[in-house]
Image (tube, rainbow, N blue to C red; front, side, top):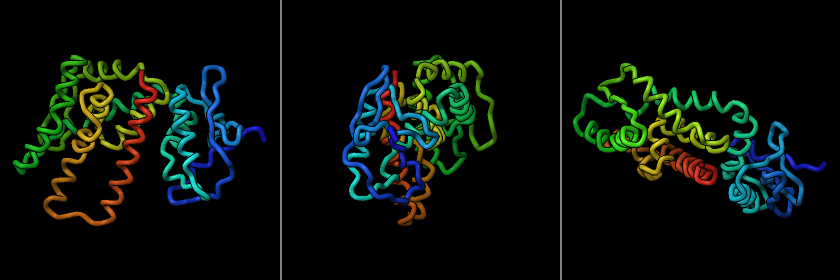
Length: 246
């Protein structure tokens, strides 16, 4: 065979024996390939794993290089994201963008608690920055409401958010979609992409309600471990965005 399958698409927790000596990168036709022992990798759908950024290719190769005698797919977020971008997003970018914008229509940061007062204050403090950014940077007005009943948001505001996100390429759009689904907020993700919020602030804002409940009832070890795993995935998605954003 001339290519090597990217085997990091296996379920989390599964491991396979390392089958290569070194991971490197090579450029061809303006795209960067990840090479295992000099052989181009392929995605689970058998496409060549080729990316638009040399730095991204090096980061993916770094995930493979750091594996020990066994490969732990759960530690290889960038590989998985690249596979997703090539196999599932490429050629469907408009649909993925529409999916992100669907979050904005009923965004996490638009629904405020009626009570208790302390939770509402935390929501206001954490969720105003993305709304202020959308207003100033995009001239897009979004209106928060109390309670959980759906409130229609201005179509023009959704359209302006779409115009902001449209220039992002296949790989950056994949990162944006991951971040949006993890936070439940296209507006938090866009504010990060626009440089208005840093990643820890986005993460805290996405967990205001959860942290309020933890403050009242405590947390269990399983929940702590799950959140730590999700934070690592969020960091990797942000890295993918930084390496590919326009």
